[in-house]
Length: 366
Image (cartoon, rainbow, N blue to C red; front, side):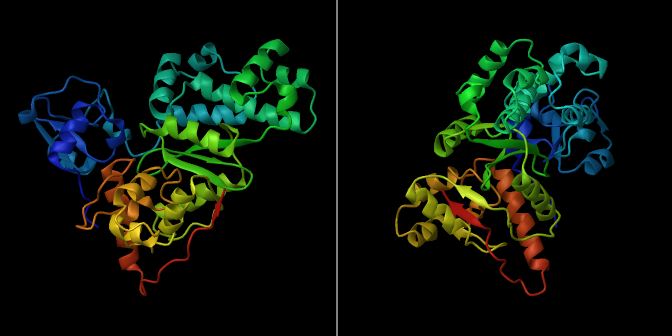
């Protein structure tokens, strides 16, 4: 399948805005220096006449350009840098242990670099992530009847008061009442279209969004209100299944998701989202047809708004809704992602011998 690049105007805008969401989508080559960069390269931007764009690293190299030493575009492939992978592995090897700045430096990770990376890609500092991870595990221990003093000590807190304050900030309740509190766990997942953040309750997946989406923070706030609980870093069997299915989806080996879903929204929103689940893999539906199908003929704008409010991307395929003319319309994760997903599904669908429509994902309204 031929890879489709964004328009030149869109790539130029993304390059000058240092838009990280385009990393891996295209590469920018600078004629005056002979180097090629990732769109988010922090270096000074050259004049437009001295810039050309390529869709792959190979094309950039074959055109005679060398990789930028500052942004290291050879590492831009939708995956986290190696030092981030190592840092996350260190956290999971002993999640209750505190990692201080000195510990990071011992791993050759500058604390300020970790802070900037986590803020840019995950919306929180590394220390905030690690603290939330520890507190999520602390809540599990408390619910099993563990002593609060012992849990506070295991989490690295030297006083129970400090533990109580941190716990209440995350869960909205002190540890004593938090034993009965409900919460959702969240984790980050790598993908060819950039990092994703997913969350799940004990009933099923309630969130799957692009980690760099500007509206992600407000989505999380709305989700907390909808499901009535806090969201902390962690994992469960639903997220494990989702991660496995996403990997197979992007490999072209899966055309339906079976991970259970928890859909929370207004009755109208849920009617739109459930209709999205019925759009066959490899096909699209117009906003106009979607409005008719949910008994709101002529309400294209309303269904478009509900479509954009979908909090479980890819699995609830809002990317399969396009304008009547066939143009993409809008997409919260960026039009390039929408085009990528549609191109991917069409290629897999067309390569399937019988082009059979896949079964639907399992969705449960909440």
